[in-house]
Length: 230
Ligand SMILES: C[S@@+](CC[C@H](N)C(=O)[O-])C[C@H]1O[C@@H](n2cnc3c(N)ncnc32)[C@H](O)[C@@H]1O
Image (cartoon, rainbow, N blue to C red):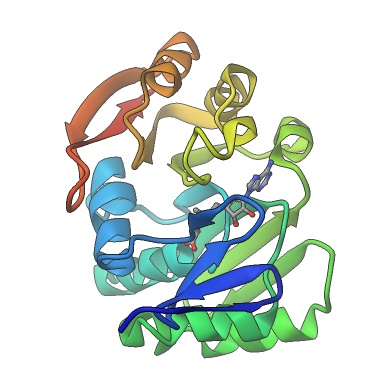
């Protein structure tokens, strides 16, 4: 039996998958969001193999935090010293209650999410968040990434490009923003994304990445990944 209920700008498909009312798109794969994250964003960026102390992941679209938690699980399993650094850009942060409800669907991620949810709830309704607990130092920069990424002083080793579908959320996939992603990537750094949209691939190639189409997750035939010259 399928069905939807509404709360806080979200629709809950089958009671478990959050769907953005604003963008009319789900936050993660209806099939298995955690496995999709591992296939697209971790393997697509050559992780965990490229992890090293101080490794820094950046992300467009924090959403439920599922990608961050998947990265943390992989980081802990890799047994490296110190904390994984994770910076995410998010225009419409979800409430702690909605995050918890979404993550309840993924027991493995939920098991490491307790301090994240506590710190998120303590952060109040708006404003950028710094989060730190066992093995991770994260920052969620709240605001439109088209403004906040150009102003960001950091550079990432790997990018998770995880806006909603390019047709529904074109502002998070523009050529200007892809150029900013490249500008905020270390030499030899990488990106991965679930989309294989031609204009996104071309924008990332024009920005300087060596771009390749890879096998997608589940029913998606292709995804895209790329590296900057070292
Ligand atoms: C597919 S969801 C991200 C899922 C997320 N990575 C996760 O692990 O749950 C896309 C996210 O992009 C955010 N977003 C859309 N447009 C944006 C913009 N212009 N700037 C920053 N974030 C944006 C949405 O609010 C949404 O949270």
